[in-house]
Image (cartoon, rainbow, N blue to C red):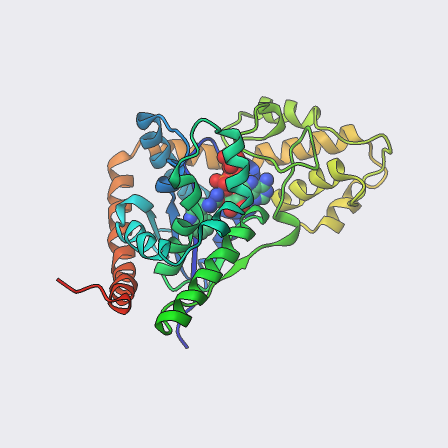
Length: 330
Ligand code: ATP
Ligand code: LTN
């Protein structure tokens, strides 16, 4: 049987939070063992909101280094920068012609970002899901590991694939989201019913992967809990449940095991234990990312090889799409 394909990406739009790590990158790692994986730095997506050009370049390289430091293995996986593979934008143009304005306007992320960046509601922001669909469909992807907030984009991607296949004949594999329920939505430390987000105005609401140990401990100490003082994973206890979810991921245990290990403890003990666990887990990642960033040439050559690899696969899909829609081959 043909090996299945996995595709995912993160935008280099700022420092990543543990939400990004838990909801996406961490779930990529085990998939490398049994699937053909493509992991990209989605720089074309990130320019849908204003970026400082020099900073964007640095963040792109730094995110690639982070993937590696987290355990993305370039021997097993294709790691590359989205803009190095022109087929993404080329497929996006074709898919734009079967995507409806109405369905793009209905996207939650488009509505949120339009509100947040009211002075820059550009066409790219609206087209974001079509570019994301192009990323995924170019590689005939089966599985897309992402966090909860991307499910709507995944639905649109599936709709576009099915619509194209119906109109022009079987062309795209129809992908599925790969979402691990308890890890799909890590919440803000200060407003635990809200998603932890890298662009939150208050830096104390999020733990960044670059945060030093003392900052991590301090932020967890200030995390909002409740007044009930029992450590249980329950819907009515979003703050405590969030801490237990974070702890279980970094400890490699189940949520039930985490609950058990805090039986009879107070919130202070929980917060310190979560802080220490997270700081211990992030330290080696931070060190490895810094080491890799010192080897710029190596990183660039790895990304070049990754892009060549990705293009080989992407080109095949693009040629077949252009042929099906009637574009004359030069
Ligand atoms: P922004 O706040 O700038 O919109 P973000 O923090 O939501 O960014 P993205 O780059 O949009 O981050 O997301 C990268 C990946 O991380 C996606 O797969 C997304 O679903 C996942 N993700 C983001 N935040 C969380 C979270 N709080 N919990 C779980 N997964 C998350
Ligand atoms: N929109 C995604 C990033 C992204 C992506 C993708 C994720 C761009 N292209 C393809 C999965 C598959 C986000 O995380 N905000």
